[in-house]
Length: 80
Image 1 (cartoon, rainbow, N blue to C red):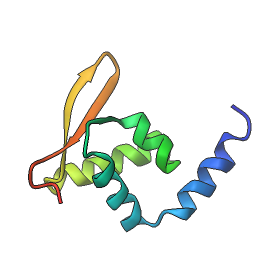
Image 2 (image 1 turned 30 degrees about the horizontal axis):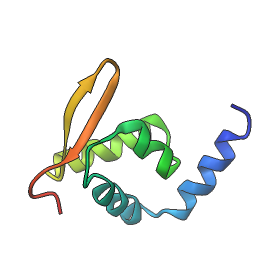
Image 3 (image 1 turned 45 degrees about the horizontal axis):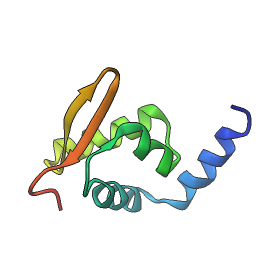
Image 4 (image 1 turned 180 degrees about the vertical axis):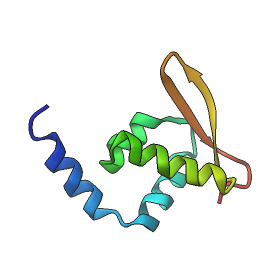
């Protein structure tokens, strides 16, 4: 998809690290796919996975289920 990378870069630059973290926690009021979060923040696959893993390590989110290759994430009860 030509032109996709510059758009992602612009979106990523609008969100700082703390803003990305807050956005993910608020977006996970209902379960979301990793790709929904990735597209909303304009991040790469590895970038969003790294962010979600850090939030999981902190006990704020957890992988809810996996449907085929799609991972669904949700907030934990103590998630913020």
